[in-house]
Image (tube, rainbow, N blue to C red; front, side):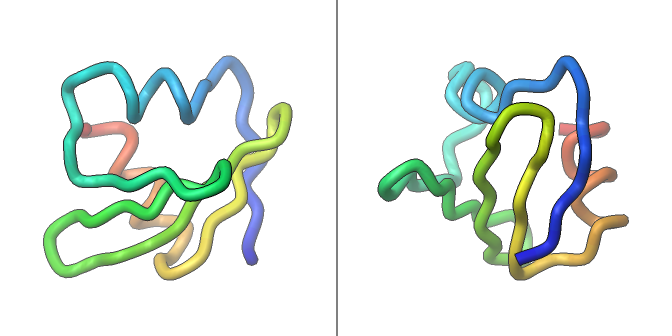
Amino acid sequence: MARLRISTFSLKDTLECGQFFRYTKVMGTYLVQSSDHLFSLWQKGDVLFYEGVEENFLIHFFQTG
């Protein structure tokens, strides 16, 4: 699983805010569907762990919603 160091970001607050519906949470891991991508995410402190997408996609995904 790849890692991305982040600051002042909450994966839980971002995905569970009510604006995004294409995810499932399983044992602390979010399975997210966006367009033709299916990927998994989880956060521990200021590190975001991800699998199934490239870092550039993930950065763009969260910048544009």
